[in-house]
Image 1 (cartoon, one colour):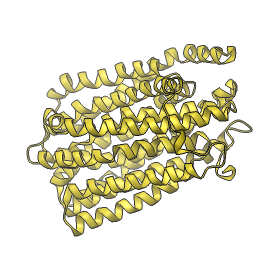
Image 2 (cartoon, helix red, strand yellow):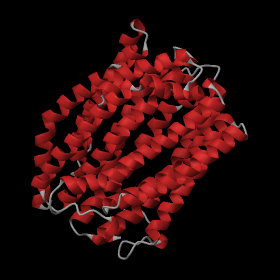
Image 3 (spheres, helix red, strand yellow):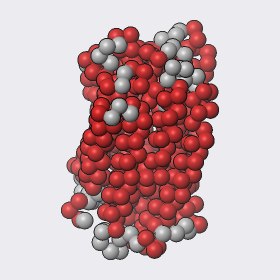
Image 4 (tube, one colour):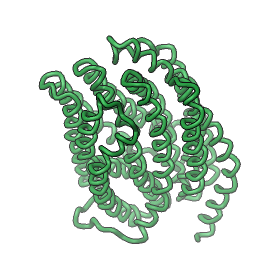
Length: 452
């Protein structure tokens, strides 16, 4: 396994950071590619209304996945701290506890999603002409949540060890299978949104199997032993202490999209379709930036465990520079190519394309601000600091967007005026996190150095 891992504790920072980040970036791009292929297949073979049905569920899906996906962040930090401090026993305990915990939580989320799908979509005022299809898609989609959570945990464990290549390989395999199944189910069998959901469910379970199989073949002492799966109170508490605030923070970002999605829904199915297509451009930009910030968390986590605080500062500066630069380049690249990209998904819906263009103008061009905010949060998270930045981001992002949708949008009914709330909220969050960053970091470092 050594040849597949990156040394995060010694030597220059930039080269190993890039080496670790590139597979993460490619993983994000593949995810977006396969997701875009889903939308492309649905838009071309099932029509704009089917695409609107899938798009109408996006905010709710992200809310649920984001919150419980915070567990993977808790796993990443705990496992990285164990690796940095050389605690192999602690890493082994983290592995077995986190995998069982993720499975149990995944089953819970599955039940929650099945119950809430229809009432939440009605509350969000999903267009009546796509409501039934959207509910069907959502109920089928939630069947894959247990597998998705298990895979995310397995990938988090691999990355905490410095291996970002195997998760990329597994995604490539499952993503290719997903694309083929989408074509079969939608273009050949004409199952429309049900076909998209069925393909996602099957391939998510494939990903989970590949991830677990890899852990079962790891060298000792880090090898997974299914008989050792258990819930240890102290380890669960540590994972949740980091993971729940981190998940709550991201979930509030997704929750803030719900009133925005409701506002989009109020403009009709063409607005929903255009917004869904524009998410593809946003998605590849943000997945790239999040890959670099995820690397920042892992690198910082290992160096925090090793008490190399000066190196952690260098990691933040390097990762932020890369993240912001990638956001600038890709954001403006997406802006200049907005029309040809959107027309790929909506070749016969110029009205929907116009709605998508409005979103791209407001979000993609200012995406680099998200990179600054996310880098600061990721650096703090590597030290196990989640609650305070989560609280700040909930107020700055969720609160501001909620007020924006309630008071500003009704008088300026366009997607541009709706989504300009994104860069404004990011800017406010940056100022607030910076105001407490140094204090929080020094407190965590003193705690680590004092052994308390």
